[in-house]
Length: 281
Image (tube, rainbow, N blue to C red; front, side, top):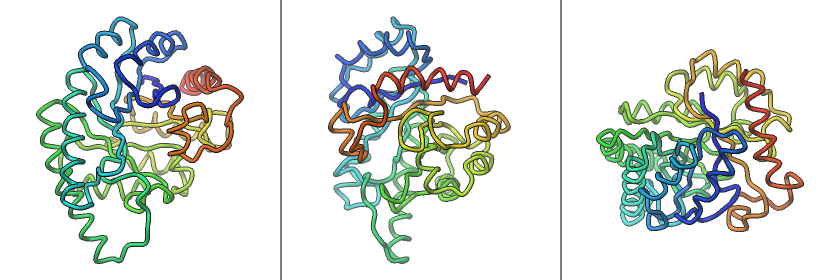
């Protein structure tokens, strides 16, 4: 099991010039870095991989930023735009030796509304159709798609582990797995450990985030039961700290971070990895 840090804590957008962060992350004790790529043109994947190799840190995952215009259940144009974007991220992940493309790879984030049952079926079919196409490309490139349910305030499409597993079953690809996040699960799951156990071998990626989207361990989440569940299912993937602060204004606004969660953002990085290494001993 490896421990990683999402670069949104320090920068948006991540560009090739952002690779200076790698040395700092490695010095704090992280094994991997998770890179949200907001636009494929922002990075040179060859240079980013070289910088990671030099720093001695792996690029553990590429995070899809499903912003406006990228929607597998939207208009024809939005579906095409989303597909082109995700296809490009799969290609870049492969070049960087990165095993996973993760996140809400199904719809624009923030699209959350009451949808009639008939329309739900239409949207579900569109997402399945698009994910099947993307999954075939990911299989060919040796990249796994890890689909993340989000909380009800960020999407109406996929909120729970059960819904995520249903989607994976519908897509029917060995390149598609589940991505669970403690922040979202804290809102949507009745029991986080039980959800992890239900995911089992289909769990491909895991975000460790405090209940207030701050430092894992400095919150009310039942971490011992989560650790026990991850070990019980034999989870070998990355455990990534994905937390946010008010320092990166664009992300703070997108994630509704209106106050300082911790005195300094380095507190999240430094204390987060210390907690995880101790918790997973």
